[in-house]
Length: 87
Image (tube, rainbow, N blue to C red; front, side, top):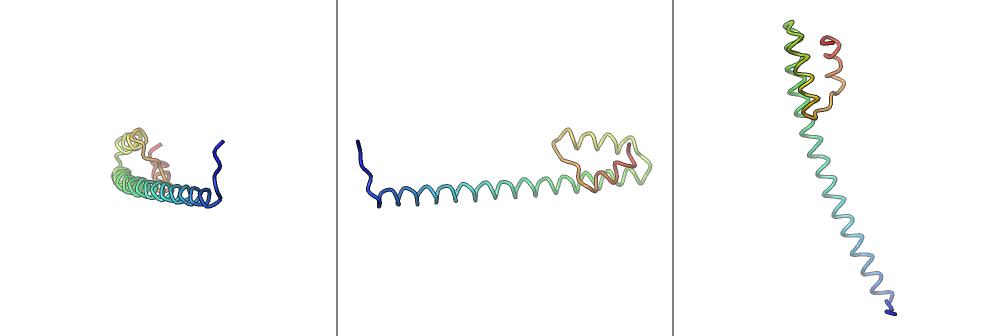
């Protein structure tokens, strides 16, 4: 049976903690990047939906809303405000 001294164990734990911290930072940056892309997509879709609603082209606005959802963009509070015009 192999014995580990306490210094080896401390080093292993410290290395493990650093690796976990590093991975957590990468995941955090990925989440931030995804949120930024989502926000940009929502802004674009919301602007277009609003324009079509205001110009009376509700069918086009509804199609655009459906496209938004099918493309994986999640409607936000602004989208739902306009969706009241579309439905």
